[in-house]
Image (cartoon, rainbow, N blue to C red; front, side, top):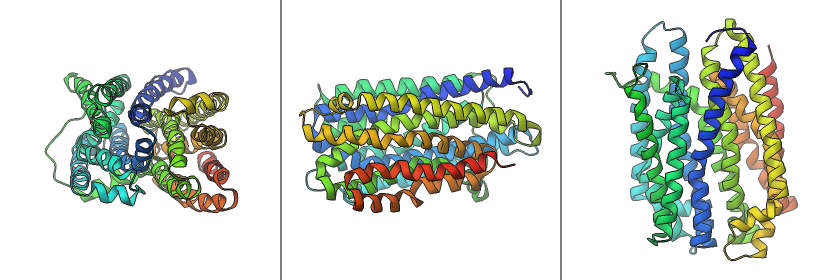
Length: 435
């Protein structure tokens, strides 16, 4: 695979990125399917409740990505220059860390769902819906965490299409079960959460085929719990956690601001935007995760030319995706809003459609930031990746949202994300292109 020719690098880039983009789109549809069926089958209060609990999903999913991406990056880096047995044991260390995280999340879901829902802003109209969803989601956290870890390792072990198949089929299963549980069975929010929790089971069953292949290079082995290895995994993967959590942090802040400005109707409208954003941002996440195995294999001075080509391909892909996505959303903002508007409320449609045209300007900058963070982490530059993720995740967006909403109301809320992402984009360019 090590070659200096662009002709050989581009097919590898296309193979990994296309598989991961398609897979991440399918994976992100877990929550989008819930949004659609909850909005059409239950109502706006349930939609608002779903939006309130999305940060809990982001934290859980981001933790799985941190462990999976960090461990898989170390697996690829150490496999390229195997000086010790790190690449043989890192999967086991990742599983150990995943079990610890799963115990914490499951206990929180079993004993504290109402408290978590209240903390996230649920009121008397939404707390019942929110508590039901959080309870199921967190109790079944071992499935989500295990799926994320397995996805990252299968991808890094030369099977990006198998990981893509797992994500897509799991998502399709979730969509079908959403309909069955919410409509024929009438299970409400509990049914939506149960459908979401079933999807990673299907995904892991599909990816288990990787262990049958003779070329499988990772498996569970005998290894003691290692805090040093856990720290290494988290340091390489923390940018993935922050990238995922950034959407959750933004949702919390925006929900609180919007509740004061437009009430539950405004939160429901923002729920539409937030869930569409999950799908669109997943494309950039897919690009970042797709280049990770390849960039890690070309770590070091000898792979500089290949990394430069990968960086150029990834940046161009993110900008083209942003242009296509924003054009589509801007033109069809009203019909998109109406899809999630069961009661045909003109207020809900107006708030959501106007917000889309402003909020999604951020795609042009967030794509570069997400890909830059993934690229730097894959090249064993975790501090720079962390700086980008932290700045766009909470350091800039929170003060920007409070300030701009106080000056411009709902328009200021929508403008906060593009403004923060644009500022971070300058730092991303500096880190990516400095010698």
